[in-house]
Image (cartoon, rainbow, N blue to C red; front, side, top):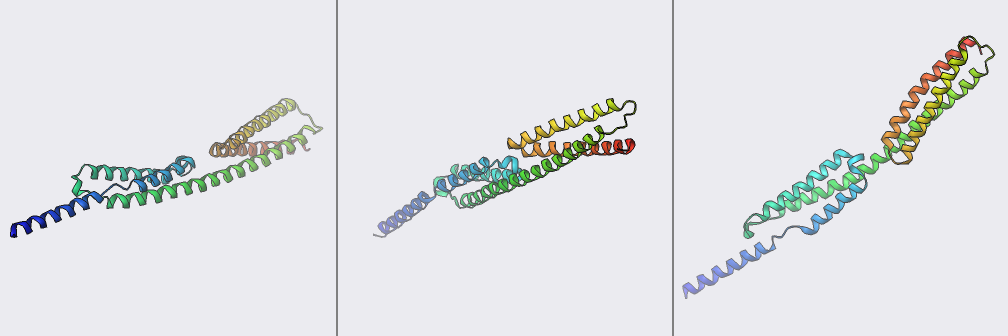
Length: 204
């Protein structure tokens, strides 16, 4: 009778252990949700507009997979996915943060590019107005026409560069648009200085 009781007790314990082991399943639904969050960050171009946040989110997802793989290699009764659940929650949070950072980063880049384009446009208009005044000057010293043609060519070249920057902006390449517009503004500022100097010398 005693042996039968011990045997039944052992059977119950074994059944409980197996049941507990059977409950240790990978958090597939949570992992899929985190992957979807990372996919949304990718769609928002997080790698471009929030590269650091995107890298952190990707690293967090890699850590999740590493932990799940580690548990899968263990004996079934000793598996535990508690750490995986913690990691996947962290990964989803980072993916969502990367998406938000990408949205904000893109908006900031768009605004900066718009400001650069507007500033470049204003400086070009100033240069064009000065060029018109210089062209109207009555004094025509030797070499004036050659210098005037060079100044006009410079302005036309800058107009073309500004158009390229605007095209980049229209295409969503805000970083290139900003860089191009800032280069135009700098060169146009130099042209304005040259034209003002020419006006002074010609006493227009």
